[in-house]
Length: 274
Image 1 (tube, rainbow, N blue to C red):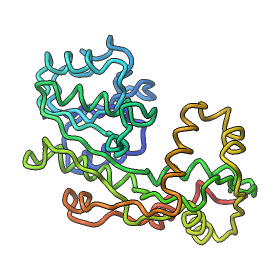
Image 2 (image 1 turned 30 degrees about the horizontal axis):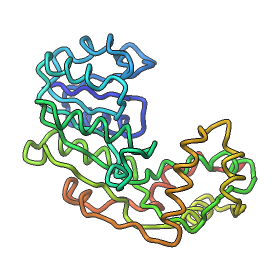
Image 3 (image 1 turned 60 degrees about the vertical axis):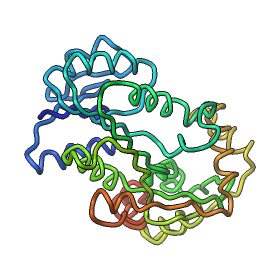
Image 4 (image 1 turned 90 degrees about the horizontal axis):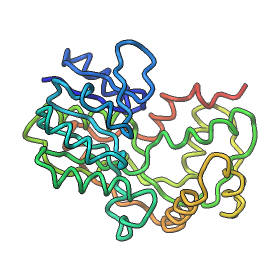
């Protein structure tokens, strides 16, 4: 058994690779921009990379890139891949997923895989705790964090929990072939997360409650306008409304999800002032 880990520079993939190393399980790390000789090039938008990356592979941990998914499936089928674990998103469960820019690519990849002959497992995390890294620069610089909806709820999940869930479905055939919605430990607001980060780093963090248009203008160099609109729509829909949680992390890993406080402690150095 050899596992291809795509997007190997990503937070979840790095955690998964560490788990595979600890188990002594064979894997091939793949990235669109390999940084060392042990990583093979596999740009999920370039079908020319697929055959070499998939040669001898039996299972794949796959990021949801829709552009060349049909070509990837064809190459995986030819290579004899038996199982694909897709890192999808719980956004596919929304009624407007087919037209929502944040959900659409995940849904397209899900549908293509489910129509293929390859056994597919879907991991659908909600909000990644790592999204809070977008606040690192203003926090480090002592500037206020701009929040258009400080009362919007999300269920921040630690990348380590997603990686452990992926390991479980990659190594236990009895868990494969299903869809899992992976929740964080709690439904918290953005304001709650800011308070947690302030406690962990021991420094007050100011919040600037801005309008959606002001936030969109502030982020224009970093977030495309249509994606910003989708985020604002999502936050507005969860403003003051707790997110529904599942027990799928516990089902797959045997333990409950890590709290946002744990994530903040693990990443405190990224927010340290000065």
